[in-house]
Length: 190
Image (cartoon, rainbow, N blue to C red):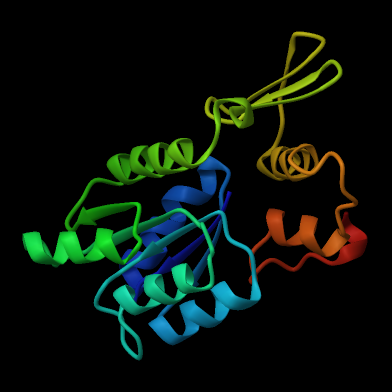
């Protein structure tokens, strides 16, 4: 998945990104709400992790604007604000989940899986094209019922192509799905 982490604490943002990347996710980081909002307007993300207390625009407003654009991007608010009113406000604003700091990274990963699972239909959890099958939840791929060992980028390419079987997928869209802004990939690398 392509994940946007909107977090102004550099060590926390990089810690989350470092944990999620080996799990096969492409992670981008926005340090303030205005940047997060701009990135969400210009690019496609599969998930948003957003801190409520962001500078320039708080996380509540980032999510409100996302939902006002009719975007269904799964969203988890990650914040130190733990009052009942804050949690209710976050969920009512459009967040799919609300996680209070401090938290364990394994719990964050489980909540990501749960939020994404809720947003998908049962049929979308398994993508099939002839003898090729991808089980999105377990991240297992098979060809003729034999397991395939795929790198994170190979998985991402297959997933983006199988999710759009009836459409032409531009190189730019594939490149966006498999990389971050810091990656030095070109269209020719595909």
